Image 1 (tube, protein in one colour):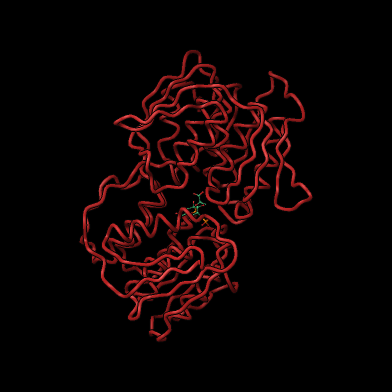
Image 2 (cartoon, rainbow, N blue to C red):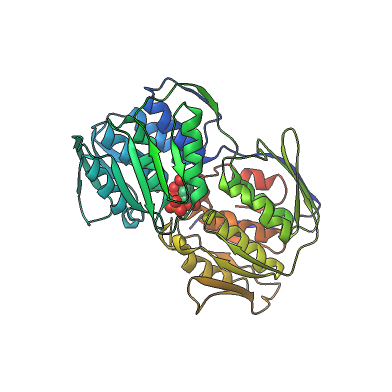
Length: 410
Ligand SMILES: O=C(O)C1=C[C@@H](OP(=O)(O)O)[C@@H](O)[C@H](O)C1
Ligand SMILES: C=C(OP(=O)(O)O)C(=O)O
């Protein structure tokens, strides 16, 4: 097993970090570029493996598209290959083949795509066998499973002969990601109407306009630096390439961390993080920013801040069951994450002190965010992170960046 040990810093954490670009923004830009016939000029392409995989698969005419563990790549490419009538087998890691895709497949079939399941109904691997337009431009889809299905459908909507009227049913999770999709579509010239009270988005048939586009740094990646600053005794970190008015919903970390002891000041180059006083409890709804839940839970566990989490149901179908993974690994930090009876509400409490001579060893469950969220623990006590290479999915340079502020032993 490979592992790293993160040791507490010997001096003030002081760094300027150039984060890689957002994988979400990048994978949308790559799909839109493909829909213009690759006529856009994209800059600051993300180093995240999910985006490298997207680029490689868009450029390949091979019959099998293996997305590895990239959810957006799987969902966005399925819609893209379907609408462009490409015959492909879509597959990924064993975990990817446990992540549901039935709602997207049903929607694409309704529009005219021929798609078969190769193994289990509702899950990858899938076989795409062409597209024959059904003449239907109305579609209803549940909003509470994954917003990625909705983004995937929206991005192909302008290419449908009659456009698309998409109605989202029930609760809508990860809504900022849907808004990011619409804003990026608008940037590339697409006109649409979004009626959020009726949860209906109307996209007429039209063409994307090729343009140049610079992808912003990754706010999800920024969240680990917020946690580092919150936990370190003394710290000042500038994160480069982030904007105050971001398309990314994970910029909510600014507001969350203002309660947990990090002050943000936007500069011409990005955002400056400085320490400030933390509150003793936090109650946060993660419906709009599910990828921040692990960062915040670990940070609160270490700072002994009582945390109540809601809106975390989707965590069970991500790279791993993140609720289970958090529950297991937080125990090693002396904290307990329990579901409160009132349903879908979780409470995090420190229940015991872990002796200072114990070095917790954190299992990462093939989930980049488990490694990234637990690494900041090293600001307060030495911690082992198992299989550290998982970070490559979204933040390949993380360990190099961390080494610039503290000892990370291989
Ligand atoms: O559209 C996107 O780029 C994403 C949407 C979210 O997924 P869900 O919509 O499945 O919650 C998020 O967790 C994921 O990391 C990226
Ligand atoms: C859930 C995530 O990614 P995806 O769904 O794209 O695999 C993530 O990066 O936290």
